[in-house]
Length: 102
Image 1 (cartoon, rainbow, N blue to C red):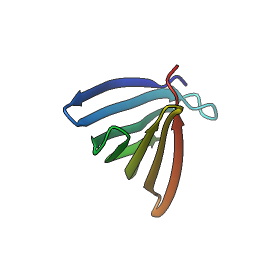
Image 2 (image 1 turned 180 degrees about the vertical axis):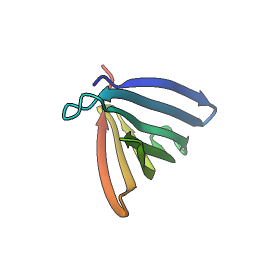
Image 3 (image 1 turned 90 degrees about the horizontal axis):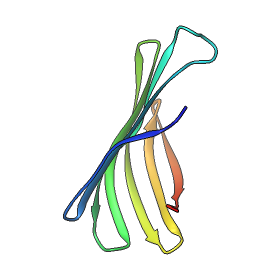
Image 4 (image 1 turned 90 degrees about the vertical axis):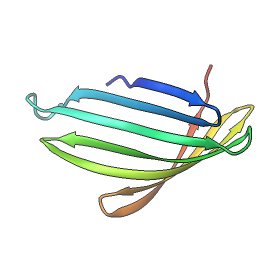
């Protein structure tokens, strides 16, 4: 599947973005899977540090799995490093993400 960033906006020190895609499941040709990779809002405390919150989720066979999270981002000259603390299926998970725009 191809990820599509639907919207990104910045107002002052607050930024937000939404990333969504839909795809057909390989194991069941009749199943359409919807994935909200993330919808998040962040506040820029400094030019290098952001913190925020968001929601992620996916829908399979008519049931949504909800995954709220909090995030912190450090911007560097080599890219952005994000840490997400996320609740998935009743458990907490830590995700580390790296983003470099070329």
